[in-house]
Length: 323
Image 1: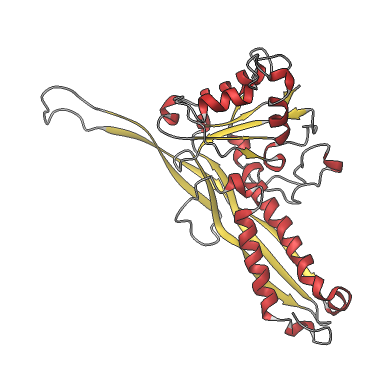
Image 2 (image 1 turned 135 degrees about the vertical axis):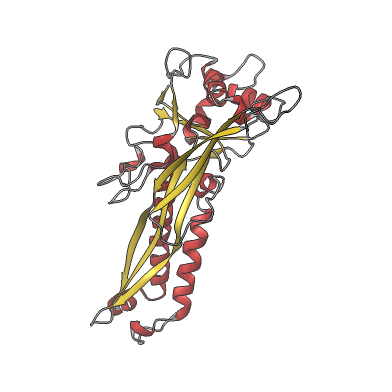
């Protein structure tokens, strides 16, 4: 760390290295990254490209029985192509000599915390889309974060299939049995041709777990409906096999209209590159820096991304759950 008498223009190289390391690590390992890391990474995207092109191959037709002959037509596979817009999620980090004098050794900590927030919102953008002014900070955590400004691309949730009426007639989970119905409906709504031999990644807002293990949703045997679901679809031999690594997040799953401890959401997907991907044409890193005439430094940190859903029937998001 530079001493307080050094000019900010000769700020210790270790400071830059620490910020770069922190940005890359947080992008992979923060709380929202628990799900993001399970989504396949789209390969082969050129640096700083504005668009990701994905070929989609449907089912093939032309398999025949009996004696093969040259007059029989060749097997055919329908091909489609999807295009996804890549958008930057960026911050401008600034400090000068006054900041160094006032904060000293805590300046690096402050800047790392700023990078933490940038990386958290970048991961949110994979799921919810990129907004020109990022995401709001919920007031007293009463509701979910809302995108601010104009929406630049969609993200995963906007292109997922919405699952409604989780309890049968609606998504109000108010009676014994409703939690189990909701969880089973989410995973079994995925077409089995996608689920066969694959693990389903299940996500939810943390409050859902608390409610799913409450007294109302406990069987006579003393097992909660969540435990019953887990026993069958996670530990058991269910053909709809759910990963034991359940993802809990308000950031990723709650919308701005969801009220904490009143509304919840469920999410599930098959984590296969033919179904869903996260695409980057810029990784988490510093784009450049500029020094001004009074010795201040402004750094631009950015990542360019999009969350891509290729087969919406295998990526599901519940409608709003009430209790």
